[in-house]
Image (tube, rainbow, N blue to C red):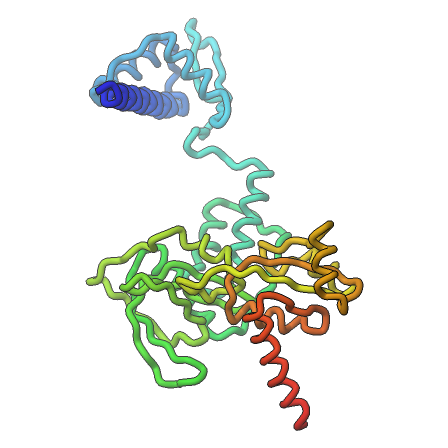
Length: 358
C-alpha cells in the first residue's frame, strides 16, 4: 500500500512539474512575440497584463510581476541569450529586444555554429548525386550556410552498383516501410523476391548492405549490388527488431550475422613487420595484446614463433573475418580456435593448388 501511495505521489509531482514547465514555455512564447514587436513599447506592467490575458485565454493561471521579471532574466541567459534593452520612452520604462527581427525561435547561428553545421552537412553530402539527398542543398540555402572546404572525407567508391538505391532505401527505413525486395546472387542470376522489414544501411569495405528482418525474426543482409529493385508494401504492418540492432554487430567483422553462433576466443601471432599496424588498427573491437605471464605461457606453447606479438580477439566466426585474416597472411598466423585454424589452412591449400598449376 505504501508503495502504491509513493508511486501516486511521484506521478503527481511529475504531473505538476510538467504543468509548470508547460506554463513557463507558454510565457516565453508570449513574451517573445511582445518583445519583438517594433511598433509598440511595453512597460513591465503592460507585459504582465498581456501575458496573463493570454494565459487565461488558454485556461492557465495568471502569474505575478516577479514571475515576469524572472522570465525576462531567463530569456537573457543560455540557451536563449536574448539582448533585452530597457529604455525610457514618454516617461515610462519600456522593454524590448535590442536587435530588430530577433526571436528566441529564430536565433541566428554564430560563426562557430555555422561552420560546424556546414561540416555536418558536407559530411552527409558525400552522398552527392543521390536523389533523396538533394534536400541538403535546399537546406544550406534556406539556412544561408556558406560553402566551406571539406574537413572530413570518407573512403568511398562512387562507382559501386546499387548506389542509386541508397536514397530510396534510406527513406523506406526512416518511414518504417515494409518492402518487397527483388534480388539475385552471384551464383544464381535468377531474380527472387522476398518481403522484408528494412532496418539499417551499413557500409563495410567500400560496399553497402541493407540489413533487414523477415517475418520469423531472422536478420538478413543484402548487398546493394545484388538488389534489382524493390516496391513498398503498405498493407503489411512493419515489425521492429527485437533488440538493439546495432549492438549485434559488435561481435562480428562485417555484416554476416548468425543467430545462434557463439563468440570464439581467437589467438593470433603477428610478425615484426606487421604487429605495430595490427596494434594501431585493430582487426576487431575486442582485440587486446597478450602480455606478461600470459605471453610467456603462449610462447612456451608455440616455441617456433619467435619475436612478433600475440593478440587475442573474441568474436563470432564469419566469412568477412576469414577474408580479413587471409588478406594479412604474409604477416600473421591464426593459432586458435581449431575450427578457424582448419578453415584458414583449407583456404591456403586451395590457393597453393591453384598457384602450383600456373
